[in-house]
Length: 191
View 1 (tube, rainbow, N blue to C red):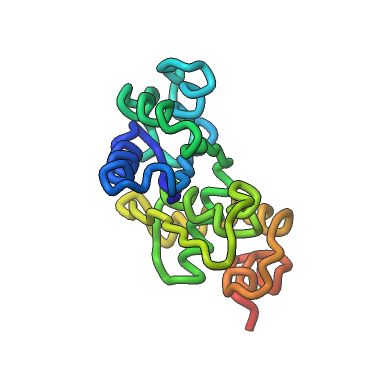
View 2: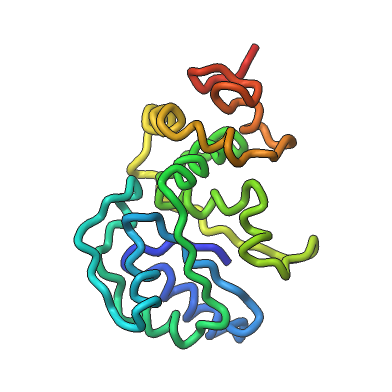
């Protein structure tokens, strides 16, 4: 299960739901945050609530300077099943435009961070025990804080990340990557 974390409400719901259904010990949870909005990650590292001085990430809907106590408590209680993962804004933005390219779904960076783990072997490196028959749930939510113009701006600013990391030749977004992976500098596919 992959979900993003802001204040921790979604994470609490996921963890409590897994516990209620008896799946707590059968399901790993990746709790995704972006650099500059990683209040859960910092709290887990310190073993107590931590307040960030501010939110510096583009993932503004992950903008809780302090995660909820309940989210921290649940994550600590299930530490063998919950893995806190922090990705860059560039990776979150890449997740946004690649989901738009590949699935025609537009999401904001707070969700793009979840999608980013699906590309370039990130998920397998985070969960090496995954097998071809494994079931993975990616929580895809959050589209009120994004436009096509936003995605185009992300791609213009962060498009370099695909040159650095992308080797997924079979996905449409590889073909539409800017400047080189068969794409043009404007982020539109080559003709």
